[in-house]
Length: 491
Image (tube, one colour):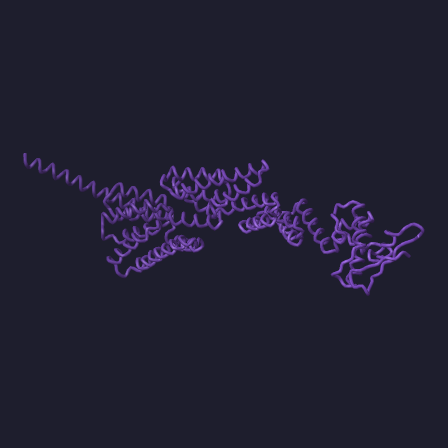
């Protein structure tokens, strides 16, 4: 009986060993096929065969190591990390396992854990040049992390982007580094780049709260506030303690409400209230460049309505400093310059607008400003007579009568004669409907037949003040009496 039991046990042992041997051979076969596919860079098939090998022999460290290498090539670094860790748990002397674990940690941005793994490799194989280089890479990533942290505190966002770019050369799968880079790109106004980085993360991890926050931040800074709020709310669902998303959501809602209140007050004609509301909105978030540019322009529009022209110009200047492409702000500032008769500045703004958007309206505005500039460089006959540009014929005559008879004791004889001639010249042009029309249109009267300068101020004076019977006046200056003293004699 005893011999029978022993024989049965021996048979079972032999069968078990045979099964193990068969399983090992089959597992090795799967591994070899996996290796062949790996060499061909068909990593998906290599993964399948390494998985089959593991299923046959789940205690073999090298199979996990090979599958980890394949997963790394497939950019599935977290799964690769798990396989590498399992490999070294099964065999702590498995040098390739420690090396791959370190590379996974580094790719995922955990440089300190990576460094520990690489040092373990060097304990097993002190001359391993790959591990030596990877230690340097891990140290560099740690250094760039520190520099980026300092840069972010100082709002040196360009420095942060630079550091993250360098760090990502070794930590290519680190979402944390990518999100920080994307956030800083958004702060620098490089929204398409920031959106692209955040979208790449969300394609791999749709629940990533940080990436959702950055997407919202880009939309917020591009003045798409409603869409931005949606992303902030989504980020808070994924990460309820996300303080940045919470603050940004609050700012976005407050900014929208205050801006809309200002717009309503403006439409209602309540300009003082609108001015205050836009001013309050500008204090909510100094980093929101695009929205603040619009708020400055809006406040400038209100300022022009309130006749605060200098303040309006200042606000429009702030708007274009924030957003150099903001056409509306250039147009508003140009109109303010026109109102102040500062035509050089108006022409510069309209030229900028027309270069950007060559529309008929912008061309008309530019030509009008250029005309006013040209007119401003001529003698202003309206100012010479002291009348408004819309003065009637009678008002022009009255003004001439007053100016022609009025002396100026502060002027010497020569200056007074010049002034008298200017008054006559101004009256000649403004009292003639044809000449007045051409003058108002900006034409050079000197180019006309009959030069405006070809006249005698005395003849005009005589014709204007002359009485019946051919009697007229003659103009002379009383040189002995000093400047400012005229006497008029009947001719």
